[in-house]
Image (tube, rainbow, N blue to C red; front, side, top):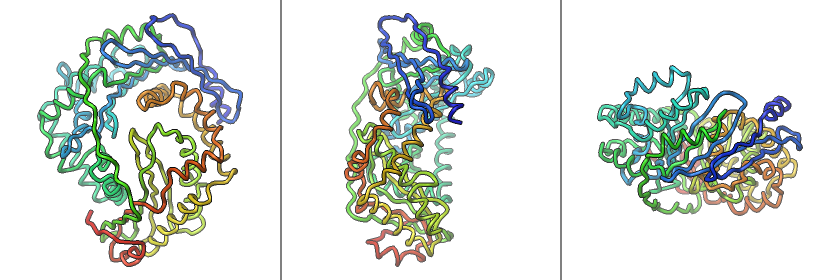
Length: 471
């Protein structure tokens, strides 16, 4: 598989193209594929900005006659006004429901006819419109992205449909113990901060949103000077830029208001909540504390550290809780990195009678990691995984577009992708130790348990004060 990946990437072609002086040209080389140190994979991307402030990134990828377009708007659920949780999500979902000149069915038929894809999404920090198609249909999908992002109709019937759809989805979460745990965990961790609820919002917030607020949110945030447009594929940059200028050049810039958010609460000791679900014979366990931002200088040490601790079948958590003790079928950890400090969390589950034993074991492993660090062998294994995996995550135009737009949105260095593998290889034991000491905080943790409360309450109280809630 590694040799196949090497061959695949080495067929990239680096060409020199004369383009307007306004474009900043960056020749990028992603070093290393698989386990071979010497392989060099050329990738060329070019950046510019239109007069209206729209940031543009174009990447040549001539492997297949395909093109991917990603329009990112710097407005996600963190921009929801207080009491209107779900507003950004509703706005994003409505983009495909018809525009000033196209109905929803017409949009779907147009993209289906050319064998392409068109999707919308809303995350915590941003919203996006993404599309892919054969490169000969580039103008078609470029026009569609412009149409749905800039000129949504926001018809009342569509608003009510998506409001009801979102509310129904949230209510259905009450049947899923993992979703219940996630909601309560985020609420406990973030308090009044917008990260306290998923982008889809809350039932109360969705019910409170008006059509005028939807229109205002779109008008205030979907602006060229608040957006990034990435085009990746079998393209000619000069022709591509000309098409973008023609399609997006008349998009009017506006005033982007600075976002002021409440601070992320500090956790003191164990903050424990049991969500009582009497029908459960297994307990869902979710615990953690605030993690790091996506642009944290210790990103690479933390990424490797998490792989060692809680990712994959050879991780410490899986080995200790599953393989050695047989208390669960799965245990994992993750740093969810965002513009602000996303959560570091550990998820597992166990039978009610062994739930608190499992929880204690997880906490002990986290404390051990804090006090003892990792071994050289563990670090080398983690590096090998990422060195082998990274090239495979850069194979398609869509994958490349996602990484390029992340680099731009999160303000990562211009050579971030160039030096990705070098940065992985360069992480030292000292780097890991520094990151552990700075980031991990096993004594101050939010603990969420979804279970039949009467089965675990007394054991849980030994750990500290327990709050009891309904789903």
